[in-house]
Amino acid sequence: MPSLNQTAADTAFRAAAIQSELETYVNPEKREYLPRFFKTGKGEYGEGDKFLGIVVPDVRRVAKAHKDEPLPVVKCLLKSKWHECRLCALLMLVERFKKATPEERREIVYFYMDHTKYINNWDLVDLSAPHIMGESIIEAWKNPRRYQKFKARFWNYYKSPSIWEQRIQIVSNLPMIRRGYDLLILTLVPYLLAEHAVYDDPNAKPNATRLHDLNQKATGWMLREVGKQDEDSLKCLLDVLYERMPRTMLRYAIEKLSPEDKKKYMSV
Image 1: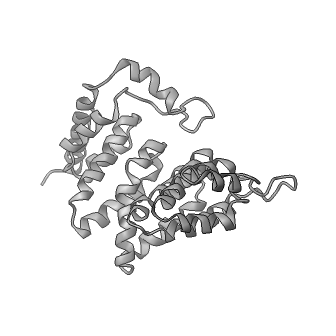
Image 2: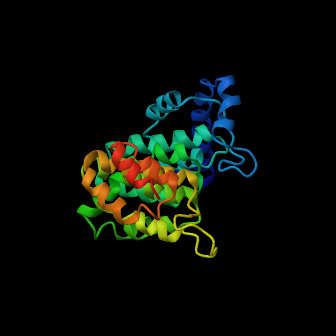
């Protein structure tokens, strides 16, 4: 039996080998561009993040080739300072999740939830959360007793201090919405608005919010997807809440509605 040190060394070696493979796809122009695109400057949402300069299709290619690596190797990559290594780790999880058994899926989703501090930009969330967390929501509805811990943790993300955990909860609704189940997102939106409303400024407008602009857009995006499936459900929610919605969220939500409906909801 290998010692713990040997096992740790093997894990680090395998993670380093995957990083080396990723580095064969480095594009110097992307290395200059990506930090600006993902807002890594001081005070910006991606402050301090570091990029090798690799496009998503190439990261995905490497992830698919290594999807069967054990979770300690995935964890090693996920804790990397390099954005593309973290993305590769998440895409490895996504690929593994697709063909996993129910027990393996539960292991992956709890691993994901235990490491959200490393899922710290919108692309990392959007390319992984719907495929792992979103599919797990569906499983949780089918098997509520087996997913009690998941449901309790997941539901509280809307009030997390982390904008990325908030976003995970928001965009994880996508698989359900596209299958015609919109109850969860329609329930979540009032909680989001209430949790992040500005209550301590008497001069604040009714739709003033502390919800990050990125997550206003994400929520509007999910509501737009609801409207594609069931416009009446979207309108019912908007009729009640549109005056409390920040304008960014509202614009995204009504993008596919008729000009008349857009004028109605933007008239506040």
